[in-house]
Length: 528
Ligand code: NAD
Image (cartoon, rainbow, N blue to C red):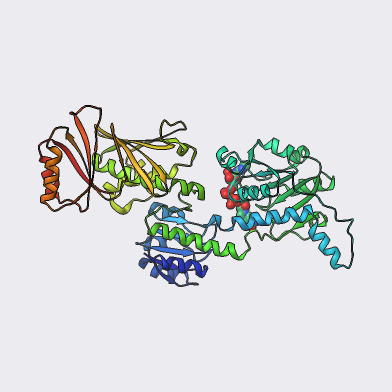
């Protein structure tokens, strides 16, 4: 893989990619024109807010597989064209999470203990110990609006201060909140019962003026308000009124409706309003993290793993990523097996997530499954970005369901793929990051890690069949490294499933010969 770094990013990020065996060219400050003329030599491109990655750049980047934006906003990248071409666009949204969460806590401590005011007073030569009586955070209720990346880190840190943490986020799972001992409540309950309210939602139509006159009226007297998200989520005029009438005892702000704000705004006349100039992400670590996050996703793609922060794919939390990683591999391998067995003409794919898996964001898994399935027909042109639109284009129905109950396994991934007149069912599970297994194919119980060269066959359960297969492979100098016979029922006879793990792929002739052996009904070869 060859990467073009077209903007300044942390040297640690460049080193990390090189250490992973990736060739990296650094050409910072190049123009769009220059980019157009050299992009054809690269598989990956990294930019900050410049240069622009236009349709022309993308179309000329015949080898391009991934574009990384070392930052959050992707307005300088033509994401639509990239998506059409199956190019993954990644950004680094989590790179400044902890920095912003820490600033939020910093502002909270500042207002709770009046630190900036006390600092000013000491520097003015005063010694006003009685004036600066604050409050303890311990035992106070903090209401976190938006339990996303930053809200989650704020909540975790608030717990460390022995605070009671409640949160409102209609899009987050109960399980995620419970993990860190946070109680999810309704919006009104949060507004009514918090001593401190902190917002961590994106600014959207829905969240603009989320906290206004009505909400301030409902709040506890003496509430503390924090905003390190975006200006305008809290109605500034309503906030000024609530400060004037004493409803709000203190405010910590990093963001404003207009930035920079009007220095004559009434907001800045209150001593109990502590302000910073949108510096949530301004730490050395956040800047380095942003570069490293992009580098990691490029390495992920290089190693054949799914990327973490694609903007043209659903994003995944680090916890989901860790948990889902083996299932992603499993889903893709199941897709491959289904494709090899059914040989195209796919009509319907049914995916069932059971147990703990059902509690996770599984949208990547169906993409991985379809990728494995469609690769059989479309080769390497398919990836996690394009698998869903291409499946739709090809008229494949995809049906997903989640069932939290399981009988025997903590989590189970079940897949049923139907083609013209044929179908295959598979079930699999995982016991850890690198341990994923297929445990059932159709009605046959098996237990194998789908990695290596496999021959999957159906045979008549009668003496001599397995021996004949062994002889054939021996004669052709192909070592059988493992064999699983999945017997259905407890009596001999009938049709049974055989899985052969071989050290080398068999030739067409050997496979044909196997298919013709007495007792063999069907045999397909697949590299997993
Ligand atoms: P995120 O996407 O991880 O989390 C946002 C959360 O808000 C999500 O969990 C989402 O479900 C929730 N949400 C969306 N609409 C909601 C609504 N109407 N009510 C309740 N919850 C809702 O984002 P993040 O990275 O945690 O960023 C949070 C905010 O912080 C954003 O506004 C971002 O722009 C801002 N930010 C500020 C700085 C800074 O320098 N001050 C730095 C980084 C991010």
